[in-house]
Image (cartoon, rainbow, N blue to C red; front, side, top):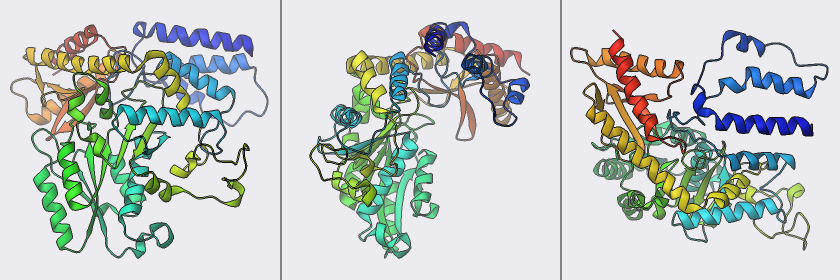
Amino acid sequence: MRALGHRILDDAMDYIETLRDHPVWQHAPQQVKDHFEGPPPLDPQPAEEVYGEYVRSILPYQLGNSHPRFWGWVAGSGTVMGMYAEMLAASTDAVSGAFSYVSNNYVEMQVLDWFKALLGYPPTASGLLTSGCSASNLIGLAVARNAMAGFDVRKRGMSDAPQKMTVYCSEETHSSIQKAVELLGFGNDALRRIPVNEFMQIDLEALKAAIADDRENGLLPACVVGAAGTTNTAAIDDLNALADICAAERCWFHVDGASGAWTAIAPRYRHLVAGMERADSLAFDLHKWMYLQYPIACILVRNADDHRRAFSLTPTYLAHGEGERGLTGIDVPWLSDYGFELSRGFNALKAWMTFKEHGVAKYGRIIQQNIDQAHYLAGLVESAPELELALPVSLNIVNFRYVRPGLTDAELNGLNKRIETELQERGIAVPSTVSIRGRNYLHVAITNHRSRQEDFDLLVQEVVRIGNERD
């Protein structure tokens, strides 16, 4: 096993070092799909053979997000130190969350303190590492619901609410907000999707009107969700204005900063997320724009007591608070009191090790580089007569399409979808597509620390070539 481990590590490093020599992505052929059918193994198989199957049938058919020309959806690219940290955590089958006198919890608490300091949150705030912003948004809205309900939700349930509560977000808000609203018992009918302005930000006057209308109809406006970088366009709502509205209306202010929150550490662009630090709760990922291995995200909550009251539960078999130095004593909080999971892995280690290896200043420079690259790509698009920008670039996402005189929008929608598919299938690059005001655009989300200007030159060149060749 030791020899196999050395081989696996060497192969992994070779894979990372030669990313540019391989297609960004390739589709798993039918024989690979067939390989994963059949019953479970009854007898043991040599470890070397198991690894050989991985090399042949799994490794070549990854999503490709570690490649320098992967910009689809919004996905991070992974680091070498993050890979090592995952291995180290697995080597001890590390647990975090429950128990107190365990080094893993000290690491997570320090990482949370770092995030609070970097994103402008008070040191008294609470937080928790999660698997992604779907979980972070769910936790943040659960705390908001319980804090704003005016009755004991945990005891009596939402069916006993004296007033129906409402939640507000823009039309561009991520689908995880709707899922959270549904799971928490608000009901999708309670989610008010507010129109956006020409910059794809939530319309503030429409928001205020919706809140006033709901109050007049006997409803309880409970929470406003602001976006610090939407998935479609990287639009950032006017967060200071939203904070002011929430203060005036006595609403909880939650910010979904899945990737855009980290703009706060980019020296030339941190002003774009001004007001984010005023949120009652803030959700953000680290497996996107902080380039860490999946999965890792975070939720910060300004009022730690509200956070703990929403989730803390201590059955006798998990009693804690007694003892001097035992596993059940209290030193740092049991992090399981701040979320819905009891069993949690040691995700904090990859953040702790990678932040220490690179330092925050370098992270800030790379995030700034990605934003600069978005503006560079936008300039290439504007210089090409065959291409058209959807919107001016606001952060790290560029949406553009191939255009040709004489084609209708429907025909252009189909053509741009074919361009996306060919770029992906040939392994040239991986953008995705989005629909903005009824038109399909190639969607380039730059959360990749390996991308270079030459990669964007190639992308534009290939989009034009493919578009010109297609009927």
